Length: 189
Image 1 (tube, rainbow, N blue to C red):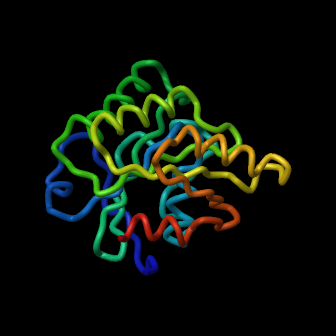
Image 2 (cartoon, rainbow, N blue to C red; image 1 turned 90 degrees about the vertical axis):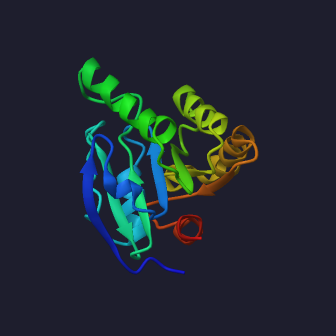
């Protein structure tokens, strides 16, 4: 199955009736500047669907996209480092945790996006642990595999896979469109 349509619906910062309409939700979460927006754009095959920025912390709300008129792709703000004051960073952190762990909204899948070059950071592992504790169905997207040197590729992916435990890891490159088909299956099935 392919993604044939994708459109931005709205951004939210609190409870919203849209998320209670029964449409399945797939959440995308990751550190600031890990390439969440680029992953979403490559997945939907639309360059400007999700706004990309070199500015960490650009996404300040929960952005909702309708994919194939069947599923909501929910783009969460990045966690960790952001070029924002402490109060804004705290608000964004609370928004992420509220949606994923504190709200009544159910996600059919959570895509945890990490940087393949950096591997899991402490904040990534904390997020994974929180998602695991909440019983979420998680897939790990190791983005930017095209930035790994050929000599590092296998070793780094083994390390990520070991740390991911039983969770599926998708080697991904938004730029080179590596892993797109595999992630589409995770989102649409």
